[in-house]
Image 1 (cartoon, rainbow, N blue to C red):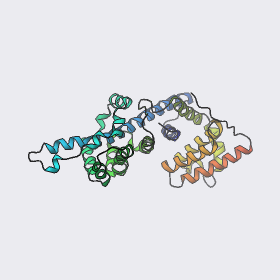
Image 2: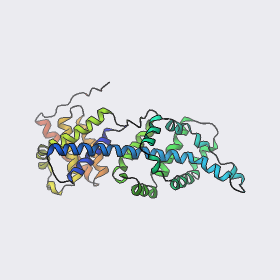
Image 3: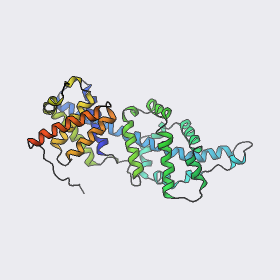
Image 4: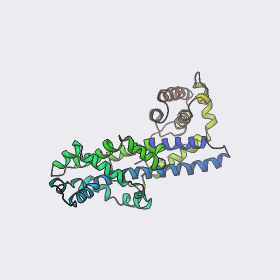
Length: 312
């Protein structure tokens, strides 16, 4: 479920946290870094699952709304005919029937982070949209439209809702740091959610890659800076944004020490992460520096790449 780009983001954030701490003995710093990285990964996965939980609760609120309106002292005909079709949405129930989702919500007490007023508000907004009115107007269920209306809740009612995202920033610990990763995870989720294991959203292979990347960047700092420094034309390391410098070090380490990751993939990935997490010019800056370093390393025949063999 978690992509290598997600991993790179978490390693970058961990390195950033370490850079703001008092320097200590290298092995101790590596242990601290590993703990920070594990905590950041766990927190990100909790935030992602909480976001999914919000989506499901908004869809389920149709039953609450129907019951409340039908229970009025003098309900109107409209009150008596509120559609609850979305509460039985097949795509919704694929999520709710996922035992790992249920366990994750329970084990991490994620229900405590759900605000009922926001669920009601989002449902009321949903009920007025053309997409929802078109959805409930059709009796039969279609897998494509079942998924589309649930995705509509996230993409059109939550993702673009500044007030909701501000609420998340205030109430969900770590949201501000991890929101971009959550957005990426949500995008991946709607591409292929049917077999998501919410208790194991990161494979052992990717967790190993995360820690290996973190430790390599820490171990090879001096050598990487020897390669990076000459490429900072008209800049010195102290004037370069810290995130850009960390991404350059990570990129150089991948070029040199991760033989199964193609050089083009490495450079493209760090360009995208730089665009997302640093300055508007950072993508172009990271691209130029890594590309120049790669050319030098290739001339010296220091790049050794091999085909990646997937573990069974």
